[in-house]
Length: 416
Image (cartoon, rainbow, N blue to C red; front, side):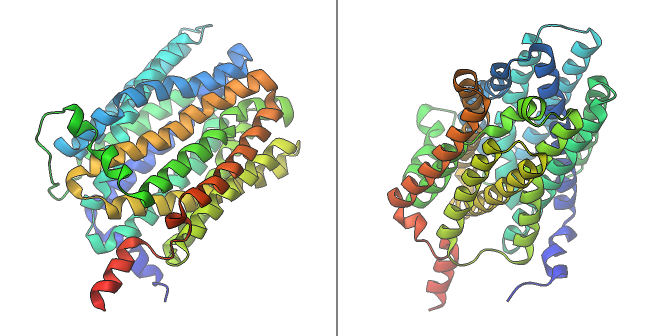
C-alpha cells in the first residue's frame, strides 16, 4: 500500500536534512545556470562543436585523476566539511568566469582552466554528498530521503537552465554574479548542519585502501552491472552536450530556447522522482532499470531525427524519465549494499562511472559530431545505448531478472 503524502514528506522534520537539501538545491541551481552560460558563451566564441566536447573533458580529466582519493577522503574525514570546501571552490570558479567576462577575453582556454578546478571540486563533492545522506536521517527514512533529494535536485535542474538562458539575455556577467550569490547561500546553509557520527577509516591512503571500493563493486555482480550499465549506455548517449549546436543550427532558437532544451530532461526526471516518492519501485526492479535505460536510448534517437522544437522537448523529457528510473534504482542498490566504513570509496567508484558517462560522454559526442556531423553523432549514440542495454540484459541476468531490492529480500527471509 502506498504511503500517505504526510508520511512521505515527514523526512523534512529532520533539521539537518532540511538544511542539506536547501544547500544542495541552491548549489545545483547555480551550477546549472553556469553550465548554460558556459556552453552558449564558448559556442558563440568559436562556433566549433568540438569545443563543446572539450567542456566535458576539462571537467572529467581531473575528476578521473582525483576521484579515488576523494572517496578515501570521504571515509577518513568529515563529509560535511568536504562538501563545504567544494562549495567554496565552486564559488571561486564562478568568480573566475565573471572576471574573464569583464576582461572580454576572446580565447576559451581560461574557461577550460576554470572548469578543471570545477571538475576537481566535483570529484570530492560526489562521494561525500552521496555517502552523507544516510548519516542525515534515520535508516528507515533513507529511501524517502533519496526520493525527495532526487526531486529537489531535478527541480534545480529544471529551473536552473531556464533561468540561465533568460539571464544570459542580459549577458553572462549577470549569470555569473547570481551563481556566486547562490553558492554563498549554499555554503552558509551547509555550515548550519551537523550529522550523526560516521564510521571513519583512519589508515593512510595506500593503493590497497584506495582500491577497496573497486574490489567491493567487483565482488557484487548486481552493483557492478547496475553502475556499468549507466557508464556505457549514457557514455554513448551524451547528446545533451550538443544542445547548444542543436539549438542554434537545427532548431534555430536562441539562449532561451537552449535553456528550455537543457531543462527538458530534468522535467521528466522530476516528474518521475515525485512519482517514486509516492509509488516507489518495489517489484520487477531489474526490468524497470533496463526499461529506463532503453527509453533513454530511444529518446536520443528521436532527438537526432527531429527538427521540431516540440518533438525535441518531448524526446528530452522522456530521456529524463528513463534516466531517473535508472538512477533511483542504482543509488538504492549501492547505498543499501555498502557498509558505512567504505561508503565513500564505493560512492567514488560509482561517481567515476557517473562522471565517465556524463563528461566523457559529452567529449565523445563532440568528437563524433566533428567526425560525422551533428545529426549522425546523435543517432549513433542513441543506437549504441540501445545495443548496450540489450548486451547488459544478457550479460547480467542476476540484475535483469531481479524482482526486489536485496535488502527487502533479506528482511523477508529474516521474518520467515
